[in-house]
Image 1 (cartoon, one colour):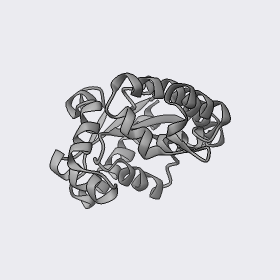
Image 2 (cartoon, one colour):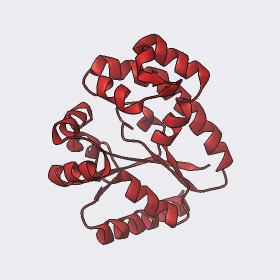
Image 3 (cartoon, helix red, strand yellow):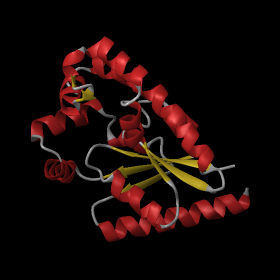
Length: 198
């Protein structure tokens, strides 16, 4: 039975970098955000998003992600409505993907809102990626066309690190990339031992 390892962390923590390290070591990685992008192209999802948020978040029937993000990251109620539309579609997409990778001992399920969405309940192990707030803000500013205030607003919509850590099996402090990569190797060794014991 393939073990599902949840990989999470706040915006700018470097989850994708860590996910890529696992992929380099031969562990299949499912990125929930990519699943959401796929879901947003499905007709029934598009229609539900239009019903809730109106036509203005689409241009030529293509979702304007920046416009939608601006709405939901300033309103917890609207964010919850969007998640209620997207999460079931992502779950279906992941289930199909998981069947395609059923011969692997482990897979990584990477999601920023692993806990908020409740998907953590379906994981065998959970890894939280952390980094100091100033580093996280700096990373997001370099990556996205945004402002420090917008990054902080997104951070406030997500769980705090201490809440994630208290529910996680492993924590990777992602400041020094070399050390973070070594942590990935250590975690895989521990998981191999656990797998051999079971």
